[in-house]
Image 1 (cartoon, rainbow, N blue to C red):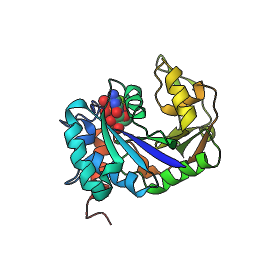
Image 2: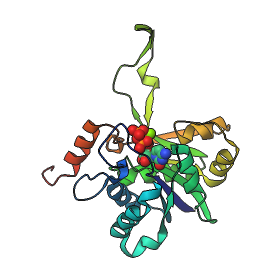
Image 3: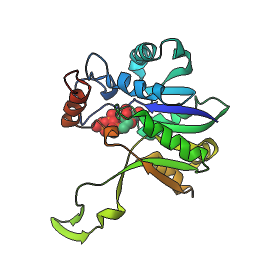
Length: 227
Ligand code: CTP
Ligand code: MG
């Protein structure tokens, strides 16, 4: 089945605060978006849709041409919205009619290995309506209220959600068309519409560049000095 990947890159990067919209901040001589796209084009997919801030569509196209070369016609760039969900929805509108599997990926998870994409696609091909990569939670998590620890949470039943999150196209479209609530990720929206979401193995390299220390780590990982 044909696969489309929506790469959401239209956020402002408030927490990173690096002087440009996050996806357009440099890791080395290339941007976060460039690195994210390099992972996407190495994974099995037919169509790629980049969702960029309105004033960065041209910059996004530059990255697309550099990464994809003669396959650049499989990649389009559309304008994002005020929230991540609005940006995903803008990307959704550009999905080709014959696509059967849709993946949504954060550009901010720039170093996500191609294997993670493959595992998500495989789960949907195997019949799951939705599949997301997860990694175990390493910290002990507490429930806190008014400065007091009020509850113990069994860490073994927790996992951190990553992207790409994958969906059967019909399920994805139906969920987005009927929802008017904001969710923090796409899997939550799909679960809300009554579908089971399966977990596949994520990768610590799929971490989201959110804060300045995350940016330092990503820059270190792509530097030629890093073996
Ligand atoms: N995103 C988007 N459109 C938005 C908000 C977010 O496409 N209106 C994208 C971001 O570009 C990012 C991904 O969603 O790749 C995950 O969001 P996040 O890490 O929160 O990025 P920002 O919203 O840009 O950062 P912040 O919340 O710190 O402002
Ligand atoms: Mg955000």
